[in-house]
Image (cartoon, rainbow, N blue to C red; front, side, top):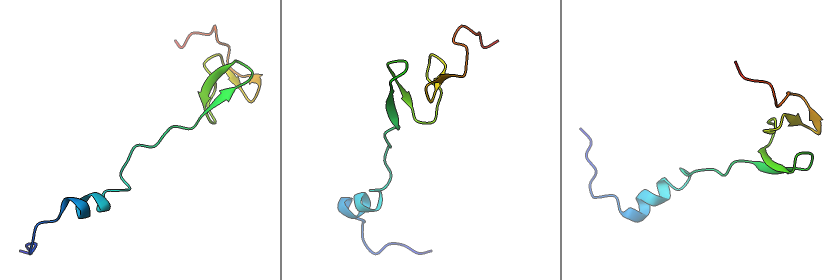
Length: 61
């Protein structure tokens, strides 16, 4: 079996894992509703691109 010759330092370990991180979600301000929403998603009030596409009073049943 292959065994490392010496211990991997904290610095080398952290350099290798530098790309593993949480990304910030793409959130933008929706002028129509005055709320924040994720890009390419319907707002909580049912608006998308300034038009109402889902009735907000509609239940999900």
